[in-house]
Amino acid sequence: MTEPELDIKTRILLAAKKLFAQQGYDGTSVRQICDEAGANVSLVSYHFGGKEKVFEALFEHFFPDHMMNELAEESMSSPVEGIRRIIGEVVKFTMTDREMSDIVQLEITLRTHRTDTVFRFLDPVWTRVRELLQEGKEQGVFQIESVSYAMLQVMGVALAHKRAKNSRFSFDYQDMNTDELAEQTIEFVLRGLGVNSNERNH
Image (tube, rainbow, N blue to C red; front, side, top):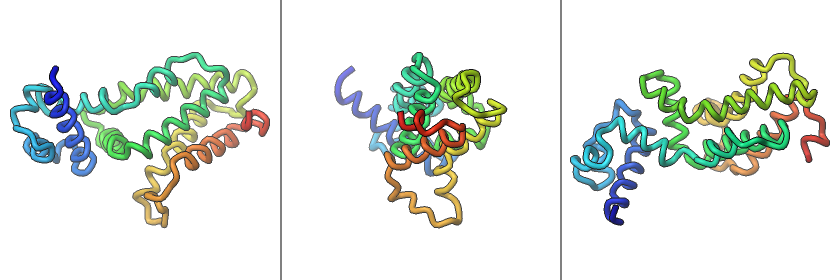
């Protein structure tokens, strides 16, 4: 594949990501994507095989591989460390690639046939969170009664900044420091799970 071909594919993907986040998948046409990318309309079919394939390619291209591979599959040293790393990565991903994060949120809310594509990437991460919560409960590290309820709370806290963006409260979303938000979210989650201070600061 030549460099110009790589370049146009990337431009199409970036344009689609921007427009899907702003207008939604159904509200975005192939022509709009190509206008945004400065590309001929025929190139979407040529490079991707249509708009649906562009949507799938977004996740293959922009969803962080390290979150999938390292966090969902890697054997971690402890439940506390595993939760710390996953929550940190979730917060950083949703803060640094807000367009992809908005697409994920929109598709989950709408529950379209594309939602299966979204969950194919999300499920391994949240499944690992559930496993870590179960392991931590069994080891007595997490002071929780229900893994399912704890899972809901952990997900809610990890994604709270997404809801805050659209709330009536005066959150200065644009000026939030990603690393600070990640660290404070991790601390809040670990406190909520009943992890003692020695374990939290380990």
